[in-house]
Length: 82
Length: 220
Image (cartoon, rainbow over all chains, first blue to last red; front, side, top):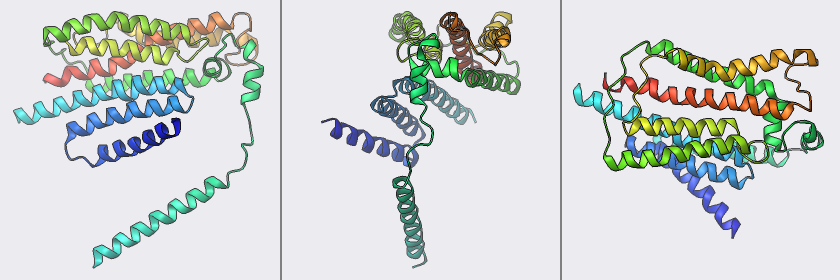
């Protein structure tokens, strides 16, 4: 059962990483990046490193995701006024 | 035709790389240095019972000292680049989002204090606690309850530097022990908790600053 879970986790990590890079729309790429970060923190937890998992979830997915979304908002507004 | 041969070339190079990488990984010998045994053997003297915290703040304390220095430097670089712009006016979000923010932030503060305290004996610690606090500040900013920072005032400057300064002060005070950041075993637990508390405050302000100092330009 855990093997199936690990396999699914690895596959969805690869899938979300690929979609993050390949998706043409910036907003979707950012959301996929956040999903990738959350899956990554799950993977760290499965690798028996919950410390790194916590840091990845808080900094990698949370704060970086918020910064990227904020930057995307600024880009949209600049494009709107220009 | 040219495109086809290019695809074949890239594919063959990539598969050759995968093949040699796999072979190299399979041929890895046993690790030359196994640090798990010495870490476990000296855990009693480190002042904490969680091996990760023991490594981060006792055995390799200077790594953590340099880490907080690097983060402080990153924030100073951002301050130098963006200069002193007036803070953007906050836009109040939907009342439901504001109410959710008001409910979530106290819980996040409790979680941060728990993570800081738990770092001594289970996964947790200053970095995670600081990140949760910073996320709470960002949440408050996003729902319009916390204005962006225009320029760091005196209190904020002290807060940003407090973790690094406290860490340096402890390191300087302990120089008589013989080597850098060698805690006396009896006081190690208290010293680590003191350093981690300072680190939590500074990390939270630095990480929140990355967001709140940059987001003021959003309306410019």
